[in-house]
Length: 233
Image 1 (cartoon, rainbow, N blue to C red):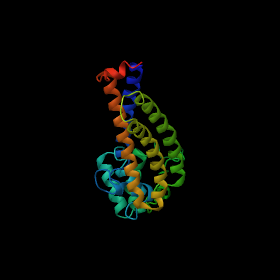
Image 2: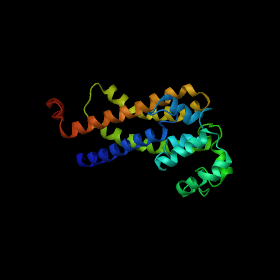
Image 3: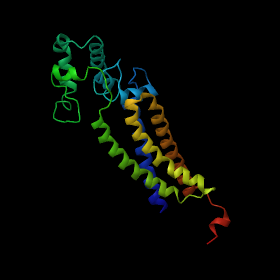
Image 4: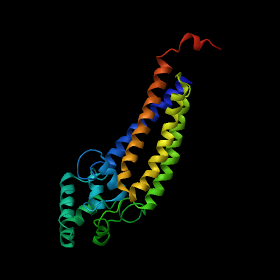
């Protein structure tokens, strides 16, 4: 059981680490500044009058998909008004070379960047994530994170910790956090200040995961429970 639990915790821990790196890469710098902030969360879900969806993507998850020179040219073009003449002269070639392999209109979940008319739609005012996208991502998060926290919580339930109510609270926290986090996306879309709740819920999830992971690994391989506990049966 220790080998089984350890293997599961190692893989889930690595997966959670990469998930946090992805969240940072996808949402940081949405406000034009480095690092992940409340403003980034507000812009992600409620949009911004100062930044377009294409610029937000180029500063966030798509920043590594273009050479830095082409990325700078694209951002300058957007900030200068995204006119058609400059698109035909220079931008279209960059889009064809770097973007159309995925954004050619064949995938309904990705923006279509094939042609100036389609690109125009993503250089308009950013209104944040649309409801369809939120619903699609919500069910993935709710199902996926439930399985993750159930496995980690089940392993942690074997740990020795007193008082028991603290142990129970640690197990319950991520489930409550996931619900608050996902519902918070929708509230943030209409009430941007609610982004603070999304940030706090995400931090609570990560902290509870770390606590259960560390205590479980420590107690399985290093810690020895008191003798009166180990011999009580």
